[in-house]
Image (cartoon, rainbow over all chains, first blue to last red; front, side, top):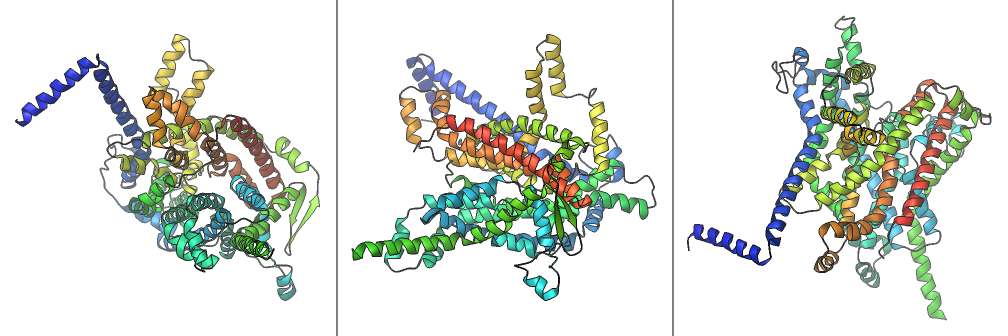
Length: 335
Length: 302
């Protein structure tokens, strides 16, 4: 039987089956295909919706200023230039800011995730008095926006003191604002950006793990901490990675805590929010153009700056996409 | 008798171990949460004066709260604007992320790619990136110009709106729908995490339930509402709370921006706390009310 005959045969069989089912099969297959086509269009539209701004930013970032106002130029720059990148890098102090951001994001993310893992495991596996109360506190931590605590925390670290010790030694309270320390302290206490969410996710994960492994370890005389480190942690790698990635990314782009506590450290997120003002100052003072920056050019520089901030994250996302999505989707979160 | 005390000893040891595990959280919570929480509450009733050696709180009563509504020119407007924006966006985000999760849970070619794209907003909408284009005066000016010209501009929604208006059905219901369509980008950008949460919930529903239903002659549309929806409804609550909270914390939130501005630029901590508490109180009331209503509908399987 040749290939063509086989194909023909398949069609014939289909029609016979269709006849037997009184047209039901044809209807079902047609419905199935039309559904798939609808889905395809929807998926394409939504993906385009999400990707379009990035693509647009990329194309704009390579344009010369005159291209921005030239209606003939759409998407593909006529005067290809990398001057925008150089300017944006200059405004943001890119090299230094990138290094600072990287170091801070990495250390903060590691600290936050390790602390949240401990806490999440504690909530998942141990019974102790007031457990529900403390877990309610975790929920409270998720629900309370940090902005509401901003004021006292601001003052708290402006005049930092532990039971008046520093006042006794130095004569006045420490000013920790502007230094990195307060934020590390907060992260060590699980009070960083969205840490309640990480605790919740990790608790959920540990709760769904079988308890037999740990019991076996206890029977064999393994201590609590060692059981946690040697038995539970290696299995928890995927969820740890995804929590770490979230923490890293959110810390990278965070404006609130960065502005609040890390004011003196040059960070990409803070620098990015200042980029437009700097462009205006640059054009009026250095280029002696009293009109200031034109809106189109400002938006072009902002796009370039935004791109430069998120490119490292996009690269990370490209390689660790599975870590972001799949492992979290497989944790089996329950309400 | 001896045996029982030993068992209690183990329980006790485990309880202590448990406390040691969550100790970082307890310390952090007490130091950086409880104290600032009450301090902030107290401050909102005070005139906070910052001096070189520390700060003093002078009790004022409700003055800060009254002033936030009566003296401050923009606060009330911003507050109502943000709350209406929330009232429209939050349900839209939940509905969208539910259906997106349903689609992404199906098998099709290129699913990994589509999933990757859908979760990009987790990066794109985080932190300063969202707010940066709204942050400076020049862009704001330009946006105003565009909005003014927008009346004559060409867009599909405008055209449909006109057609509906002419045919006489363009009433307030449609206006809300068009609002959402106009904001679809905002909605998609804000629903990354919610999709993940729904998706993880979808994966816990056992296949055998659908099989049993389809053998009984249940169409997939029916099983969506009779199986998937009830099974996933607890996550509806989680997502609702998460979405509202997330909405409050976003950088492009005008109220938050205003509060930060007052605090950091003008150094008036008292009014800033009062405003934060007003906003927080309203949001908490909304969360409480909606979760109370939803918890009646939510179905717990086990």
